[in-house]
Length: 265
Image 1 (cartoon, rainbow, N blue to C red):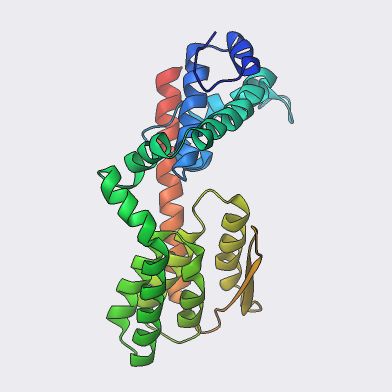
Image 2 (tube, rainbow, N blue to C red):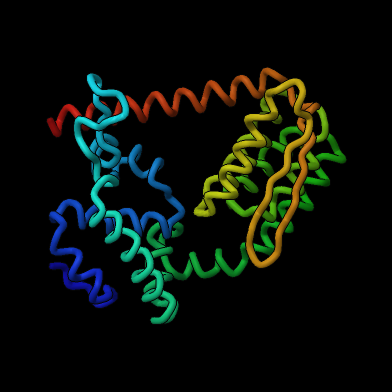
């Protein structure tokens, strides 16, 4: 049985059914989620708690629709413990002030809590400034500056930068500039909000279709935001290069997974 000051009695009782590796996996997952890293990205990283086959299991080659090896997600007690840990840990961080929460965030986002605090406080103002500068660079048709500003907006991973990126994508640019703008939209899709990730990635997928000139991103929260992008001016070569880059990244991740599976077996 695990003993954590933030864990509920139900979670502590349930932990008795888990192995040490399974519990360690839960802790890694919930903490990485707070850093904005989803399970797909986590399983492809060096910090992964297990191999993909351990997490998802293996499908049977002889009996379609069944698994020859169940994964963690097929264990009811493990899934229940994961959901309880998410609830209990986040509740603990909220109820016990910002000190520990800032420590968790600082480890992922900045070399020190002081730098992170300054960054968090200045996020909104920084995005507004970058957006204004991007609009100005578009008016001036300065592609070098547009590329740099798109990269900066994308690195913030904040949807407040999407309108400026969308306005820039309505113009015709060279391949490198177009790729920088598309990649920035993809980066905004990466944080915790799964609905936002699916919506923005859907925009990128539809951008390559000749019949789809428009796409809409929905961000759900206290206020709903509707953002439309016109991709009709994006060069086909830029879209193709972006897709090729994503495929290379996926192939690299699959290769690492196979290596880990062989080590475990």
